[in-house]
Image 1 (cartoon, one colour):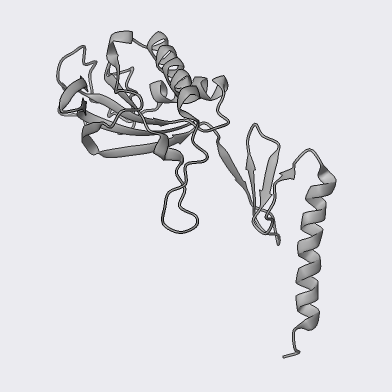
Image 2 (image 1 turned 135 degrees about the vertical axis):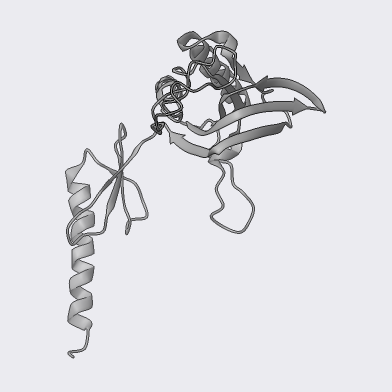
Length: 225
């Protein structure tokens, strides 16, 4: 599950020329669902969105009002408060194109995006959990599956990309770097074209051994300087 979070002074959504949702200060979130997303991905994203600190320390609780300063003489501390801390609003917009890829040619490929009917149910489940975890009246959304005009007044600008499938990069001395996905048994080496079962240590060693062998062969064939 992916989300593009933007800190906004205001944001709104229009469908067929009519405004259907709007917020004042808070965050606007574009939400994309992948074919293999589960309930755990939703829980992760809800926690992140409500707790990520993108507002300054001099931001008071809004409570429906505009921004006010706590102490104008004190320098504000950046990245100090979450949208919950300032009682801001959240506008969510479904965005299947977040999983688009342009690998071959120039036409985007969306095969990693969750199918419409399944994603609609999961997206509304995400909204329900977000409302239960915060204040329901402060959560707004667009119209799922519709052509929308999204107006965003990005404050900063501040934009973050969040992904429920966290990546951990593991440096290996004298070996090609490997990429492991937390919570998954998939391990990919940069020189390998196919996934490897991380639970199978033999397969991991065989890939590394193969790289070593190729390197040795190249050294033997190289002309003496």
